[in-house]
Image (cartoon, rainbow, N blue to C red; front, side, top):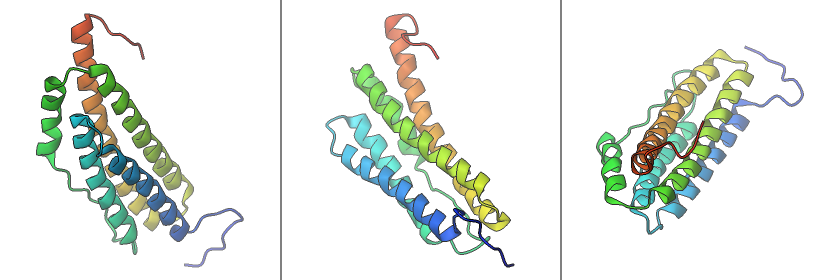
Length: 164
């Protein structure tokens, strides 16, 4: 298959480099957050850094349409996060940290969605679809913890202190 690239069109190699840069940024942020005094922030950052390393490995191992992205998540560690929330008192601080992490995840998902839409080859789109599917799962995991914290805030205040 021969394809003449239009000006400004990205090759799969360039795209993979950009995906790797997004994951490296997530990993660097998580590594920084793992030094936090906040137990929830450390635990969540450890989970997300494990996933970021797996995403980096998936990007590095991409070779063709047979490349599949699968992220192994430690469901038991994810399920333990609400207990950390309940044991800690500063829900507002936790909410702010979670909003920051969620914003980072949303940006990664948006980048992947745009890359998938912009890349013209079906083989690469299959890889990107798997990658995007896993990124959305990661985002949902963070959003679940955020919703749990927000529900606890609501329970304490007696009303929703924010609106969507």
